Image (cartoon, rainbow, N blue to C red; front, side):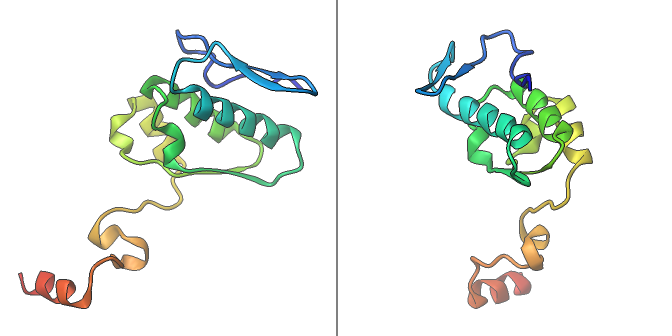
Length: 135
């Protein structure tokens, strides 16, 4: 099976994993981004190659990845043959093409106050909630 990296469309060199039996090397990575990028590529490859039903990535995975690469990642997640769950913070900070692709696939969107899970912000105390209601 050939795995095409979602980072391959970028102008910078993407990591090239070496899946030899003794080691896993990610070469040609930019400083600070090699770990998340390599993990994402490995996870996407394993999602297709292994008997795993889903892939879950939290927003922390994308903190050191260039915004332009997020569009390629969005396509990779959407094109996966299995379920992928991705938490994204600040969607508006990513390129429009990534925003559209991710927005079209949204299952659950959370936000402040009324957009909180179950419609309630759990970190507020009862006193804060009653003060907010009186304001």
